[in-house]
Length: 158
Length: 92
Image (tube, rainbow over all chains, first blue to last red; front, side):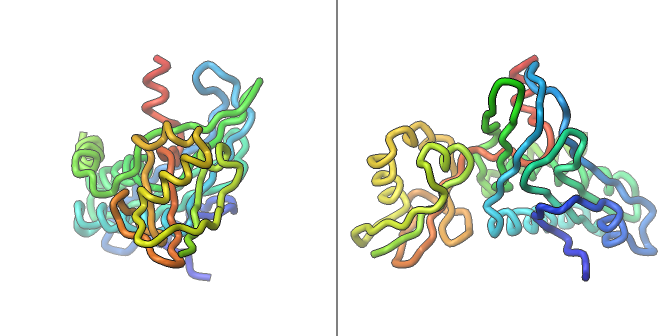
C-alpha cells in the first residue's frame, strides 16, 4: 500500500517509509524529526501517554502544514505521521521527513513542520504519571493566526 | 434542528461524553450551541477563551452559522507532537 504524506494512526510509526516517500534523485539532503515519549515531565515520573485526535480535521491540518512548508521552501517535499492511542516511554509520537536539494531548506522545513503541529493540529495528550493523570494543553489552535505562523517560520530559520 | 456536538480531551471528560446530539432552535450559530452546552455542563465555561471550534471538520468561528445536521466540535488547546515547550518553560 502506498505510504500517504500525512497520517494519524494508532500503528507504530515508520520514519524510513517517510524518508523514502519524500526523497528523489535531485535531493542532496533529507532532514527528519522523531518525537518520543520521555519518562519525566514537570518533575513527575511519566508512566505512559495517551494521544487523542479529531482525526478528519487533524489530517487536514497536517496536509495544510505540508503545503505551507513546501511553499515556504520551494523544492522541498515534506511528510509527517502522528500516532494516537496509548504510547509507552521511548515510543515515537510523531515522525517528519523533509527532502530538499539543499540541507538548509530540509532542516528548516522539518523544524517548521513540528512547530506548526504544536500550533494547529487537533491532537491532545493525556499524561499518566505516578499518582494521577492530566490532559496537557498547549496552544489555542488558529490556522489563520499569522503571528503564530511567522513565529514557526522564524524558529525554523533561527 | 438537530446538530451533533463533538468534544475532545478535557472537554470530553467534563461533559462525560465525546459526542452529543442536541435539538436547537434555528437560526443558530456556534455560540448558540456553546451557550446551551455550558448551561448543561457549567464546568465547560472556563474554556470559552482558550478553545477553538470546528464546523463539519473545518476550523470555524463562534459567529459561524450552524445548520440542520451539522457537526460542531469544541477543541481545547492542542498538545500534539512530542514534549510541550510552553509547559516545560513554565516549569523551569
